[in-house]
Length: 197
Image (cartoon, rainbow, N blue to C red; front, side, top):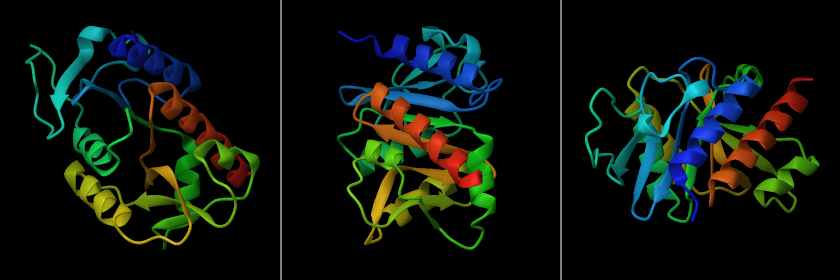
């Protein structure tokens, strides 16, 4: 049986090595039946331990107190993702320079068009227009989660990538396993790099 907490720690170290979770930046979570584990706030992602993960319910309430640690400030984003997309098992949020550059090139739009390149197939794309959501950044993180919830509930005519960008902030992707979500972060990095070049 997969050790969810161990896999999240491995992912944090991997993203740190890629330069996407520098210092204490970013947050990762994964489901455990009808609950989930999320990285604690303010922890170095390059040396994250299982003790630095917080057990949450799907409403965003701490299941078991972990003295000295509190949940990521962006827990509300993970709660919205799990409730919007019940089949997903992991939600990963990282910071990459190219993602911010892509946002800067589309300041007037909530839906950024993506190029029709092979990497899109990793999301299940089979042709036609493809977009990724971008929300504004808010100091009050639940406002980001609410904007995300509202936008994903709007009817869409194009293929929508399972993830989104926050302007001047970072990128989030989710999947039906930690591995799938991690692969999708990598695919988005490639796509954003392609767009920037």
